[in-house]
Length: 430
Image 1 (cartoon, rainbow, N blue to C red):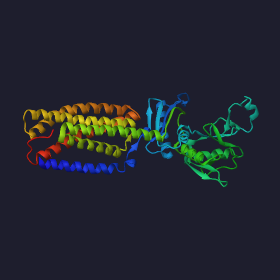
Image 2 (cartoon, helix red, strand yellow):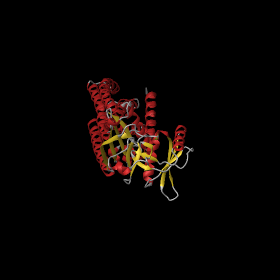
Image 3 (cartoon, one colour):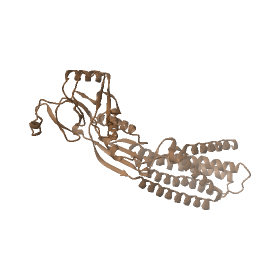
Image 4 (cartoon, rainbow, N blue to C red):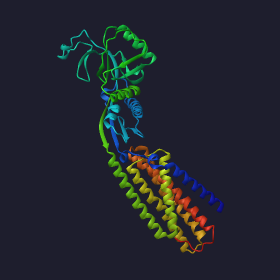
């Protein structure tokens, strides 16, 4: 038994070393959630009235979820949360974001790129009065200039393979497009048939440019000009590379949390946790004496293992997650209280310390497992069906339960075994 206890102790020491390595430095290893780092929370809702004929709403939202994820990845936000909510909504959390408006422009833009011909034979002035020729529509550029455009779409953004930002000879940014093989062939056919006409490049019903086709273009390349800034060019590159959303989305909720509020939440959460931890440590040491100190050591290990698991799993720590940690402190101590009371009962029956400890742990085990497993099941349900902060609470609570079971049952018993297997113990300090 003594050899077994030493092996367990070595395992715990190794686990402690690994845990310290996993969380150091904590500011880089622990991912803080939106409510702690500050950032932006968006809820997007699909406009199903504009769903293309034959398109499934479920498939459209699933496709949009992946496209939005790709856009955010290219935007460079660390540890974003993107999840579907219900049938038509997508929830996006962007911790630590510094330019919320730019993120909204990238995420919410449909990015439907179309190539259409300008109807130069039609009378624009008459069309502006309401006499729009059949098969035409009026579109505007970003400065409000009107164009009479033929409604038929000749090519869409689905034919684009790559998009990149380049600088023109006058220092103005533009977006260079590379077409797929199929798109390049179609673009060559379009430009070959319409030499001398104007081809409008339209993004989300806004005319970006309408150059004259001077010759058949066979290189599979095109450019979008008329861009005012490098930021706008980069946004356009991102949305074109990630693809157009299959259905327009409306932003129905937009909440921005400042970094100062996040720091204040961290400070208050830490103060609450430290006060609770100190109170529990003092109580256990006073009420259960040396056995209480063993429980205190197990409690500190529990917190260390919990934070290490969060870092290793790249889980996000939220304000409700801190509440889960504080709850874990109480649950961890609760297990030790049950064990120690069982040991006290055995000692009152004048059992030897070795026998009292063994019987106390055996009698307490089932009660501890029942209580923790039922709580764990509840936490897993919250994790499965919850989003954002609720999932953060469920994550820390689940990990905390598993860590507390290990420290309360395995670690403390190993320490008791090592004490009892050393010099003969006539009386336990409990």
